[in-house]
Length: 479
Ligand SMILES: Cc1ncc(COP(=O)(O)O)c(C=O)c1O
Image (cartoon, rainbow, N blue to C red; front, top):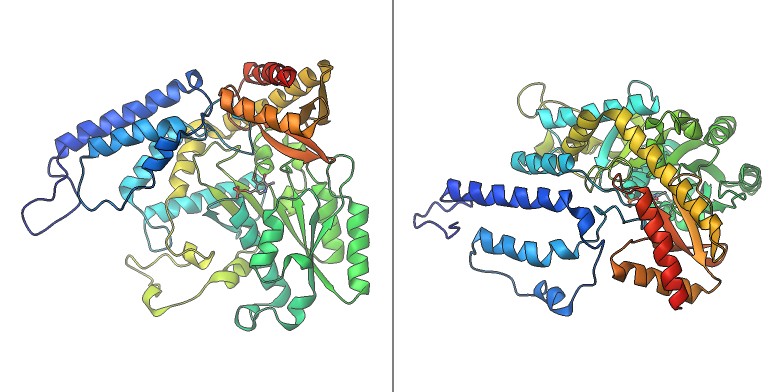
């Protein structure tokens, strides 16, 4: 198609020939659907050749090019070298698989090019609908607020900022945390994700104000240790203000005793936040829901629709029980953003009153499509199945004398290793990646390097867990 600028002076970026663009667009759509339909036939991941990497270090393009030529470059040099988390053999870190439905919704969102920072338009109502559905999912009260962010790292950061407002009052936004703020103390488990200390750092309280409470044998926060730490801090004149529980730790999928933490927070008059990056959506499975009991009592929950929710990246979310406090933490009036009762500038409060972003994309649409198309029942079944896969892998590991189970399947994650050498296991994982068969990640469990398989992708099946075991035994035997 022709993308050269037209001769007339009113240059736009729309095509001269819409029919050609339409045909090209249909080709691109078909190719991507083919890609997803046949994802299993390709390697999970493949090493990136130097010459391919070099193509992405070229100079700034000054002249126009044909869309078909740019797409050809994408098809040849981007598609084959993606991370592979759409592939059923992907078991690394905590990555969702995405769906064709989410992909199509993302295209529609880009077509509307909506900015959800504010104003009165239906895309904002779609995000409000997701807030309402999340409120219902977690049993939060009317008046709860929430919003989409990139991921749980940012969602946790927002929740810590709201807790800071709760502890120090709205004035903290003017005065900063000097004075009383220096005495605040927060608590989370030693198994918490690194974004929790990062959130403390980013909001000025510092990682030193976060107590990493030891865990029990199941990687859950030790509640007696937590109580001791709070009492010791109070005795030292410090001001405990926040407990952050985890629903699904990143290493082992452990779930803190959320009911006990909620009761403790009520007793001690502390704020209770839950990092439920992937585990929070266990509420969608009747079988798993009892495991996260207590989540409904939290003051806030951070989680991702892009993990167990299978919404394409990115779709992080934070839900807060006290909408007024949430708004107090972020609302920043400005003349050029003045809300009106009528017209396009109506619809206050806006999402920009509830978070740091003013320009915000339409993440809500792919989530709305996902929830409406599949329904929570089916999504809950997918989530439960990933946990069944982990149990299957655990049984396979237990049955192999050469494999050592390091973390059993508490949820959807299994950690194990071959033999006793860290170096050998690190080599095995690189070989697994380079083979394109499966892609687990690594972590450290009890000081031992572990092969970590996290089943998040809805496409993963028993044969993928079996392929992992077979390949680990093969590469392990190679040394
Ligand atoms: C328990 C936990 N918290 C937080 C995060 C960070 O989430 P995100 O990568 O969406 O920022 C993760 C990521 O895996 C996680 O497992």
